[in-house]
Length: 285
Ligand code: 3HC
Image (cartoon, rainbow, N blue to C red; front, side):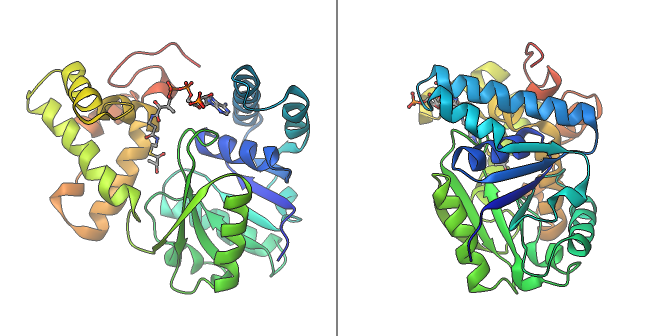
């Protein structure tokens, strides 16, 4: 099937990046947020990223302008009804994602493909609230979306080959390398990443070392671009907490249980870069 119009639900860290890379690849994009304030914030993030792309010589100024013009923001979900494929990138909570899919199912023609950017939740469970389980697929992008070149495709129990191939075509056309996982909590990346991040918080909690030394040890000792606590701030402590909760609910394995310090930081509003403070302090963006 041919995809020309892409709908994106959510214009947060991930949704704005997904909208941007799709527009850069020539798709018409409609992105929806729940309020004008959140939408304006998301569109400003896209503007800033396109500007950075131009400054870094990754995209021509005219192409960046065309990409921005290809993105329409809305606060009305019905404006996504004409999309060939809709990517959901709302908060990492099953009930919220299902509510989006249920509503979209009533708005979009039966042929529209629904993709979820979920990092850990079951595609089969999301698909169950729609009348098109064969047309629901996982498309997991990585943050920052314009820079990270991976997309994990997730095949739900009822995802058709045609749907998987359409999602693959879209991911490849926006410049990503694709891996395919079955519908298993955390898929490939978060199955391995989440216990590691949680262990870093536990190491801090136990007083094994300072946050700076934990990050320096991993950055220099393993040649990672960021230490785990910096990466947690980058991904969002709330997002990681929700992912860990979802994985713990599935596995009942202590490796996935969010440590008390992570929960406390989320409750205190220390969400990482996006709130100006997590394990470290940041200027507000
Ligand atoms: N558009 C296009 N390209 C851009 C860009 C933009 N807006 N902004 C930056 N770039 C390019 C730069 O030009 C540069 O390219 P080059 O290597 O060819 O010169 C490259 O991206 C890196 O940019 P910077 O030099 O600005 O950045 P750093 O070198 O400081 O790296 C980082 C920043 C890419 C964030 C790096 O620290 C990193 O890789 N961190 C780890 C990120 C990570 O692990 N993300 C995954 C998180 S897990 C996740 O998302 C899953 C979820 O489910 C939890």
